[in-house]
Length: 152
Image (cartoon, rainbow, N blue to C red; front, top):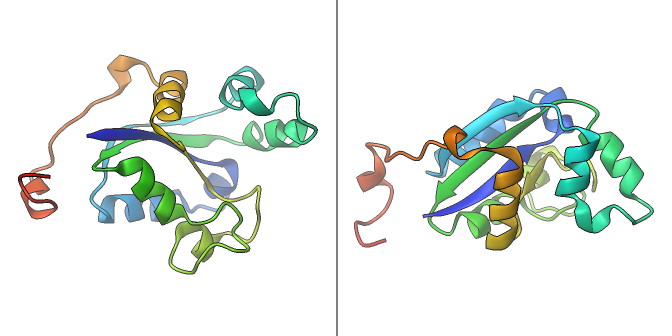
């Protein structure tokens, strides 16, 4: 099973969309194996967005991500990184397709509700930033046989 980090960003929390978006992930059959409400600190933001720290837009990005709590989650599932990114849609809610999370709920590039890891290496690094090993609780839902074939 593959894992990915999800952050329900400050705009998602402030707009009271966390439950709706968590529901979309659960309805898809993805397994939440860790979740917590946290306040991102400037130090954590710099670690998470290390590749952007020197860019001119970074101060605004840091102010945004530290401006309100976020819901951090680890999702697990088959091909979960690709599946989640397709569920989210294009980065900008202005161009994201209807039916995607951003297409349905966002009308901004920066305030696009959800962060999701963009690859396996990023997922491993990001999960380690937000969760200790003892905060991650993998389990097998009893409905798994009804969600995927035994050989998947």
